[in-house]
Length: 167
Image (cartoon, rainbow, N blue to C red):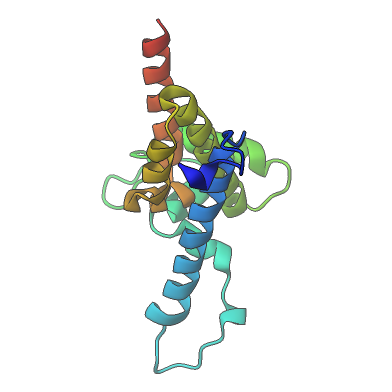
């Protein structure tokens, strides 16, 4: 594939990095577009400068994970409870948040570190640039770039498959 080779035809040493950055930029601009235009309440004055862009990467379950990092787990038998969320992701986020980072930023960093690790492991597992491209632009990988545990889960599943293949 010419996209990931240099002019002599030798494979580039880092196709994972190229694919990761290109696909992440597309997702980033899609979220900016969605926040600025699709999520806009046209009846109110809107300024993108008043919005916290990082918080848009941590909606829904990301808010719950942020709350777990900041306040821990709780159980309310009559209402919303956070005990249904797997503890590994918020624990790693909490370990990073101890350095002084905001919880949302820590969770986003954790998600992206696991996504990059997934790209590297997927490359080692398949040795296929086409698989990397398919994975990078698969619509559900949008959630791997959010403050959700999906990137960690995918990495652990891929790691298990890699170990099975090696043995």
